[in-house]
Amino acid sequence: MRQRSILPVVLLSVTGLTAGGCAFVPSHPADPPVFGARTDGHKMIVKIPLCPGERISRVEVYDFNDTEHTNPRVVWSASEPTSATVRSGVFELWTGEGFARSVPRSEKDAVPSDIGVAYKDQDGHGRDSVFAPRTVENATLDPGTYWTSDGPMTAEQLDAQLPCEGGE
Image 1 (cartoon, rainbow, N blue to C red):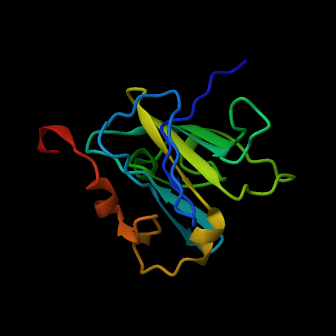
Image 2 (tube, rainbow, N blue to C red):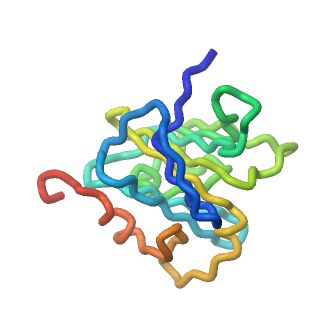
């Protein structure tokens, strides 16, 4: 049986609920940062906040509302980023673009109403965040901003949530 690979959760759904727990220790123990998401046409783009030098190595998207399984059902995953953009925390859900490996989302399954997006960095640390794709799709955002439960943020504002060490 596979181990739970979900990180501490911040629920970013329209209801503003929060949840906690999970198996990995966050790389930044301060208040969990929010992730950003936006749509570009039919694409769902996610921005994960990172400190300089941190790089994404793996991403999983899971059905946050899955109560039928011990571990929430993973609906998409990707690893081994091939682009600097993905390694810096910006990627498109469902396509695998910018990753060497990906497990596609089953076309027969609808996108869950609340999804968790989890990542691991090059050191095995990570976080996750939960949001409702429909909320993101309906958000009116200025160019260069991402929807968050704290309001629209730029990539720089998302990264600035972290207490990066060494002045980075």
